[in-house]
Length: 333
Image (cartoon, rainbow, N blue to C red; front, side):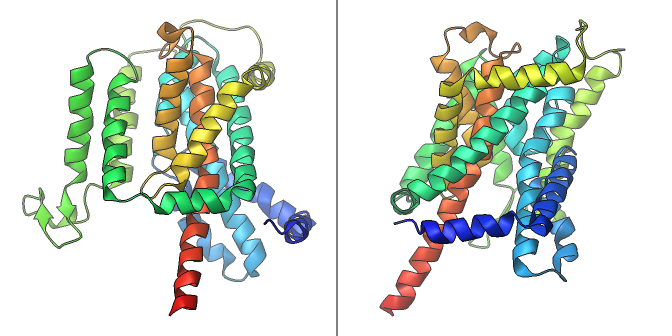
């Protein structure tokens, strides 16, 4: 049962002007930091953590969580404008977000991302309150076999995302897994380092993200005067509001993608990146206009952004699950 009295007390505490101001500041910092390629919300928390040493526990927690939440949307800004995801969770957003920018619809794409991210985040938290216990218990049932099947399923999704040769994209996914095995395993075995000590921890995520997306995109943009191939006469503010309205006209896509995000976020070893890719693939399968995906389809942006924010609700459920297990073990022993 949900203790609604405690929920109401916690909500009233958040509405105090000090905490509300910290939420506002944290969201702005998160969006700015998340828009920097390779600078994820988690890294933003690490950078801003010293600022919370002199704070009380609640304001510090509110500030850090606001940075993390803002960072999830911030990754969509460069994904839409520069074809370079600010975080791994925004990879699926680039598939249709950047083609919209090339059509001169960058403001609309960002408006869609804002609305989808906000609604997906709210739905994720709502589900956190309603079905936290059964979903968390179900997540605990996933073992190595189930996680292996999720990994295989993820490879097939990668192969089917943008069409083309299924075999080539499948090999690309397998190559990514091969790169992920570089470094020292949990058993102490060293693989693929070629004697390089700096590779013992594996390939660093941030340099890989910048090299694969940011640097490669710079080579494509170096001989172009403009990113957009056509101009839209409406100003960016109007386009932003138009994008928000267009996102609200796809409630089923948002709810479906948010549900997938919550479920994937609750699973161990899964997260916002897997959730956004899976939701994008499901949106493509359910769409009547599959040919426009990858060419600036708004449904793809809605699905990706709804899922990666809703997955945080599932991640909190996973944290609650492990806390409940620890308390249960303490009571038993």
